[in-house]
Every structure is written in structure tokens, then in C-alpha cells.
Image (tube, rainbow, N blue to C red; front, side, top):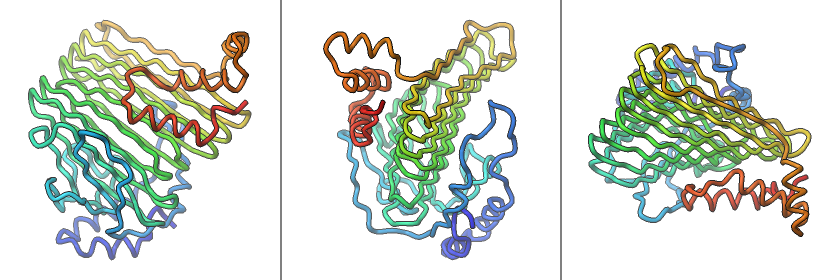
Length: 385
């Protein structure tokens, strides 16, 4: 067994001119373990890798895409089972990514072996929606994406993953944010099986929002490298229901002086779900006068649900402006429920108001607010006791 049917993968890459390079990447995929570190809470993967390894997915192109998500004012690029369905975007057969190496993870090597590469720059687009899907059952949809924001530019980028119940999206995404430029990045993951490995090299400003739900197995790993005078804000949110297993890790490395980061982690875990959100920040020796703050909180609904919210800090210099973190995991607060009941609301109505108010923020984009409403209503999380 494995993530992909190996003979299907070999047959798929045989049509590429750089077949031998891709075969080497497949060999790297086979030789690497899913994880090496088991005991450190900062590096441990909470992902159930067996759920991926038992998939044995087919690798094939698809022409059946029916785009179910459109966002006003955003240019839509559809990636479906390896095919990029937009003639105006730059596509190449290169199996490599400028910032991410195959050895960084087993599924990085697999994704690079199978994918075509998309390159997006701020000189071509200002608002882009990359809709990543697998419209066929029991298939993998790979994506290799490079994004560059040129000096002085601003780009809004939405990465939206959504696929069939038995299929998987697998993505390798690198982001280069130049000096005096801004990237506003929204990552929405609603596919049942998701692997997403991202890396950002930042000289300007990057504002990130990562949201995941409806995932039997979801592994999202995002590394942000901050150079001098750069900044990053990030919000990570997860709603786990049924038997979901969601693992999100955002790792911020302060490399340059006077760099700034601020993160908020939020999770709801109901039924038998496991939701894990970690925000790790490291301020290195030469990152003088830098600052970081990570705040995390989770609500658990039901006896079997589990949640991990783990902000972690490592400071390697004595010259910092700020370094703080906090975390809490709890049930829906009884005192708030009692207060709302005393104002005439039923217990279920009180829980609904608290949960919706917790996971939503005033500055959430409209499309995310709508998605959160749909998930909470359809899953009946807001009616759980």
C-alpha cells in the first residue's frame, strides 16, 4: 500500500520529458519516513499517517471539473488532478520548487514528482483564487506553486482545497515577499485528505489566515522566514467534527533584526475529532529587537473530542522587544451559558452564540464567514451538549 498506486504513478510520469528526474523523486518518496522525531512537542506530527498510507490512489488527468467556488473580483485558476485549467497562467513541467526541497518531507517528494508547476507574480495578478480539487474518485491532485510579490506590490491570494470524498489534494507552495510588498494569504482546506507544505521568504509583510475542516486526515505545515524589518500576522482556525484528524503547524523563524510576528490559534473539536493547531516562533541570534506573540485557545464539545493548542517560543538572543504566548483548552464555559440562559436564551441557543462568536472574527473575509456558518449548521456542532 501507499498514498498512490505506484504503477499508476510510474505510468503517469512516463509522458513527461523529464521522466528520469521524476523517477528519482519517486525513489526519494519511497525512501523517506513520514516523520523522524517522535518525542518533541515542537516537532511531533499528530497526523495519523496510516490514513494516508492506506489510500493507494490513482494518478490521472481530469477534464470533468465543475468549479463550485467563485469569489467576486478574484481571478480563478483551477487545478484538477494535475491539470491547470487556465491558459493565461505560467505553467512548466519542472518538478522542482525554488524554496522547497524534496527531502523536506516524504509527500513533498511525491508531490513534486507528479505535478506541473504554476508560477504567479504580482505583476500579472492582484487578486487570485487557486481552486484545487480532485473531481474524480480515488485520485490524487498534485500541485507545485511558486508565488512572487515584487517590490512595492500587493497581492491577495486564496488557496482553496476541496475534493471528492475518497480523493486527496497534495500541494507544495513557496512564497517570496519582497521588500515593501504585501501578501494577503488565505488558505481554506475542506478536502477529506489534505497534504499542504508551504514556505515563505519574507522581506516585506505577509498576512496569513489558515482554516481547515471536514478532513479525515489533514496535514498543513507552513514555515515563515522573516528577514530584517519584515512582519507576519497569522490566524489559524480549525473545526473538527465526526472523526476528523486536523494537524496545522505554523513555524515562524525570525532571521533578521526588528522583525515582528503575531499569531492567533483557534480550534473547535466535537464528536470524535482531533484538532491540533501549533504556532512555533524562533528568534535567532542576529534577530535583535524583534517581537513575537502567539495566543491559542480551543473548545471541546463532547466526551471523546480532543484538541491540542500549542504555541511554542524559542529565543536565542537577549535583545527582544516582546516574546509572549498563552494557550487554553476547555469546554464551552458554563458561566457564559448560565448568563445567556438568564437572559431568556435556551441552552442550545446559548452554546450556538458562544461557539460562533469564538471561532469567527470581525475581520474574517465574507467568504470564510459563510463557510464557517455552513459547517456549523450542517454538522450541528452548535447543537451539541
